[in-house]
Length: 367
Ligand code: H2U
Image (cartoon, rainbow, N blue to C red):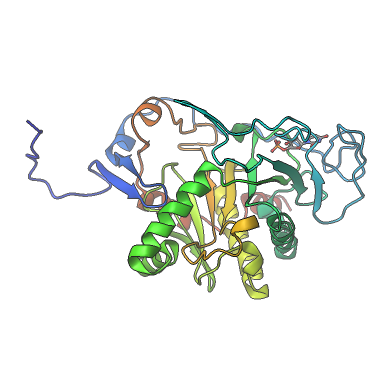
């Protein structure tokens, strides 16, 4: 016999457990916000800030430095892109071909060679700066370079994944501001799933899922962190990570390269505002993994991709302080994702934070 609901209390999402549906991944998240009330005896203090040199000639990502393969970087003054010297693919590795025997399958699309091209893109010549501390024109240069790489690599590769791992906590090996770009001849799992769920939604509603979602969020206003004329950032209803956000355009846009001049400027502005709030939350350079998802490219460019909507995911691991992170362990690994504070509570905390970076405020006070 199934357990029966016996409570006479009125349901409050911030008080009572419930499950929320993630339509992009077709999965459920357990929300148990009452757990935030449990006593916390763990660490809360801030780690001491490490001083990063503005220029270190031995750092392979700096202008003029020599990289692992002996190549010397140019004396770049804005963004700088180079082929990763430690790519996840060896260019001359033998093709496994298509193999299938019962439960052992290699190469999910027969006849399509698995090729991945890995690039590193530096955002700025200085190592002691991060995106929220860069100027709007400097961030705009990053966006323009992203769009350029999407066109260049998208002409050949079906999926171009732009992603930034920020902070040692996210496995980033170098503090110099940079992201990576991996282009592949196949759709990796996450975009393959997002392609399917968005396609299913479009087929039954005739409107792109994330366009409809952005409209809903901009009416409800409960989960918005920052917004402007062209963009909005929400803690999605189905967020897994405590301060996870979703960056969405207000109009239907397939890919980064389709953004207008004005939309690129407003994107630079909203990124700066969001990332400043992130840093201000625990007064630390906020770690995260972020990445762009847009309509597939390569041989898919001529297909009807109306179901796609460009968006960026930000997945930060921190929960309670600059050092206390959320772990996706026990229940998450073995059953399903679970979160303590609700998406609405996380959005409210981020929304109420100042838009002046704490480091700039400190500098002003010291003067
Ligand atoms: P991450 O710290 O986010 O991994 O980025 C640094 C990247 O830079 C990493 O992928 C590459 C590493 O392979 N790299 C080079 O391509 N050449 C070097 O000389 C050092 C680092």
